[in-house]
Length: 378
Image (cartoon, rainbow, N blue to C red):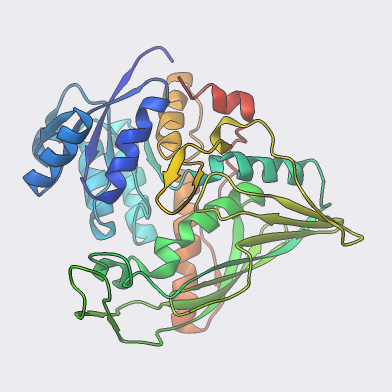
């Protein structure tokens, strides 16, 4: 990379700590400032990581910044990302980038007019386990992909999150909050989606918060919390996706991809690493030996469990390297908007009971093998 790009963080919430801690692992980017609408939150985070604390307006006007990471709440992601490119800076947003395809197309227009890039999380599909899964599929380890299943189900967030309200508002729910990890990885593994159909429900209209400091208060649920969808891909594969915050326990695996010659069990797309299992036509299962991929190495301590691979910021680093090299980023606006189309169409199908043919498509992001991944790191 020919230069070091200055990075600003807008939004000093929980996820900002991961970006600030992990950014130094990557070449060509340097976090220089953090801002928040709550000045004290920005100051605390800035002091923790020895960067400047600024107001949002100061961050947008900061001439030392080339790109701003949008870590605000989902329902303002669109507005803030548009303000970022209008200020002459590249934007990289946490998911979801937008809450509608119309907002996404408007952002695309704004980025083109400004001559700036917009990228978006999730970047977990760049992790070692998921890139190895892609390599196995591309090598024909399970034959031609015909179908699959995905399950991301739990009993919700109000039991541990200190302020869970926004998770139950339009723009969140399990499809738009956790769904991006699964949809992005399916696009990585299989390709673009042609059509979706879904059923959805809201089993509880109010949910009691049992975590501190708001224990005993209630959240009003304004979005479906149980969704069962089927995705039809352009290559003909059919994948079911079950997403719910109304399930106490289940025995489904996170992601399974089925082919004409076998099956591949893929770890949680919310993480970069994990164990891959391959089952051949005879039904014999074998744990796949992990390849030496730098974004699959455990590097993040878990309070009550084993460490795991966490390389959030990889998508940002890849975007800036792509700008430098004149290529398409792997977490591109095109791929992101197709993912938004998939997820919003799932919600629309759940409301209407009709199958929805998508209006967007995309190319699979370029694979990130061990050599390419190492090139991102210092």
